[in-house]
Image (tube, rainbow, N blue to C red; front, side, top):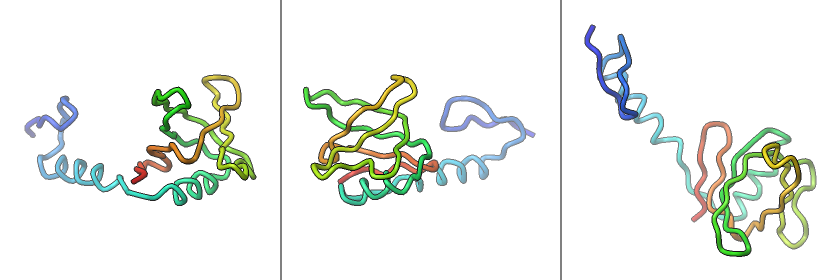
Length: 111
């Protein structure tokens, strides 16, 4: 069988062009748009599982954190406390500055 180059720049042996197109279509469908409230609810629903959040820090820089939350992680002011293993500590995210959340192979972009 011929080798085909997929969208990632490498060949997949034994994979037809039709299968590669299905893979690309599947990847495109894993992006959803949510509002800020839905993004916070999504983070709360992770129930200790790891997720990735991208947000704007107080100094204006964009930051991405991979971590998890415990119950009642959202304060009354809308601050979310996330444990980041790479930073070996807890980090606080302002729910009003969230740009995207990735969880269960799906990326949720905040509109």
